[in-house]
Image (tube, rainbow, N blue to C red; front, side, top):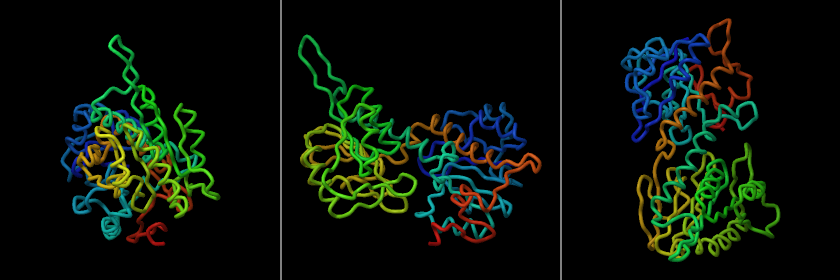
Length: 375
């Protein structure tokens, strides 16, 4: 089975879908790996490192020729896949809800598109979950970005000239990114608090040494849907949460927002009026800015200032740590493909009735087959 790894073409994308470590693992399974020249340079992986691991290097046309699976970080433009054989797997983060036309083009080309971000949140698939692996490092990087823009120290410092107070950091949304942001801010010495609509996260927040800020006395609100993701809240809960956040946010130096709802625009957590209550020099980092943003006034790809508060809206935060996020992403893909490796056939075999396969498969036999896209 031939695996093709292409150089990422999306603006600002620095990751790569395979590393030399994973090339060796694929070869040990019995696969061959072809990597487009220069694919790993932005993730600090030289072409020579891939060759030393056993991969063949070449131009895109050579890499695609006779490939049984095409591995990527972001879904490749269907036009760039001309020459790929019908039935080849396209395994990447495909952004199916916002890139539906691209999914349809994969189907029309006879390619079998597998969206890794649709990986079911089940125990068997934890090691394949790209959202978790990439969000973990995004949460870490968000705190470093906030510290860089803040202009003051994070920890309390006692000196002969006086004491510097610790920074107050508030994390909104306690998924994988939020939990790592809490841990990182705590390690830097900040006073950390956090909130989430899911009641089950309160214990997680407190276990990391942060203060949990939760809405009380609103009956029947749990906020957790399938796979542990947040769900849309009632109007009653939204009003109560807005009041709570307004009183708390005015006392914070840094706020990091991470809230996302799959298949929907990011929920608005901070209004312009709430930003105006923060002191000048404060910083807000919006990790959901590319999905519409949690913060009013956030701009994707920019750092803007409103009411003296900096709003950080970096795109593709995982790509800002490309070497590490590439290593984790590549392992996720390997864990997925190796789980379905048929030794006798010498290739990946995807059973139609498998829960993981049904979750990630978007197209097959020239048609879109995902229930999440057809429902």
